[in-house]
Length: 438
Image (cartoon, rainbow, N blue to C red; front, side, top):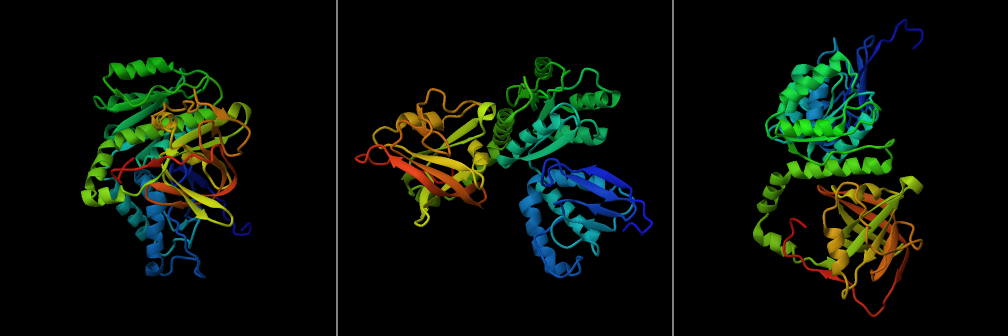
């Protein structure tokens, strides 16, 4: 209100990962209102403008937290530490749901309680970056997104603004630490943070390095060698950026993050596999399916990229229009290609000739590697992605909707085109022995 006489003094508070990597809170010192984007919100709509009825909205508040904030519980705790430094907080203006005004401390306390419980005993990765330096922010976000896809916790740390004690605590508690290259002419504040970081590293801790592409970096090989000399274990090979980052580079960084997330979750995943009753495991494993290679592509020219995965959880889902579903694990690189409105291709493998394609696409690929090297494909007959020359048939699809499960996305696609190469041949069939892992 221009007639209120208030001079608004806005303070910006970095709150990464809530629930976007670049989330920033805004605090108005003149009104004591904190604008939090997605944090502290809930998917609830009524005639009430404020949090008048705690019991009425509590379940929705908790459900929203579990879905969007819980996976980044440590980031929630760091954000609350920053909020607690504000002089007074009267209202939390959320992006979704009623404004939190009547019981601010209660809702803030619940976020802290739930996040503390989720963080206890859970391994996490610290991904460091240097704000406003080269492409460090976006590259670190790509790594963090990949880690999150593997259902691992991640903490983004801005080395320019980190409190020394907080930085020491986070680095020493991390299962792995990702470090960027930095400018040779670093200011004293950044030099002190870098010194704190290296002093806080534990022996044989997983570490990794990446280029910031700031134009005047500490050579990445020197940084990698320094960590090696300190006795640290390499989490993934150094990520080098030789030109302005494009989608292919960001995909490489995301895939490296996913590999790192899978690495630190290895013990937890093995324990989860062993927890399923063996009889139930074997019974579920008797569900059979065909063998397919799902492919997808994006971009044009220098930004063109493509991906692929072996699939057996494919099923027809509708007659009119013709539609299919494909279950895609959340940590699959191809998952990011299969968003609503995007295309993909289901290559149906032949019963009499599937082993070569099956083995090729089932193997692990290095981050950013070309999955179609030494594979014959037919171009220009499908919109969604490459068609394998050795496939029995293909279905060219467009994503219509997505359904989330705990560890997979169910992708529903409308089939827009397709063909069969050999009507006399049958589809390859996959018979599993167990149900709790691939």
